[in-house]
Image (cartoon, rainbow, N blue to C red; front, side, top):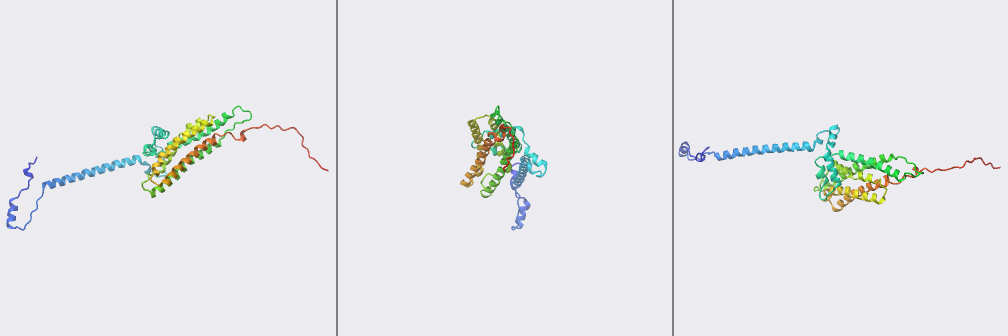
Length: 304
């Protein structure tokens, strides 16, 4: 290891003689400390470059894990396959989050943002279609079972009506909401922005509560039905309100309130439509009335 004396500056004889002969001459001294600092700075730069490369590598890995959807073209099967890349535990966790809304907890930020999916919303909507249709037919059958004038006819058209209403609500309403929020975000940059897939995911999982509710609507009690309907509206509506309030709270107060009211009104209309259409008493065409006609001979009356 170098001694301290070796690191000190020294005047050499040649330099002293040169200065004596030519006082105007200049000398240049090189500092070992500066070279050491330069070497340290270079090493520091190398370390920073290595850190930057590692950070870029980590960010690339994160982007590949979280944003693989952008790697494939939208007309390929791989592009849509990533939307269904979830496991059972993730789906169950998101269902629990939709059933137990907690103030201050954002559904998108806690459950969806890492990997929004279409698997859960698609099968929740499909299951709700069949539970509504089957429960509605079963409710009407049990209501009039044993009556001699009632003839049961399965109402298969309710399946198509339920599919049209549910999938339209789960896709068209999020599309309109996404377009509106994107437009407002361009005017108010501080607003929280959601992607279209995230909004579809929120709406799809918010409908899960209606699956067990529609099964319990088979019970013929108007009070119980309205209580269950109100509970389902409160739970699923709370998920929507808690999710979209951060996205509009920085906007104009009137616009923010109008947006949330519109979201809630559409949700209430959907729930009330479920109960009123699928669980109403059967139509008159399902009631068979026995009409007895007397045996009479019809003749033509001639006038003279």
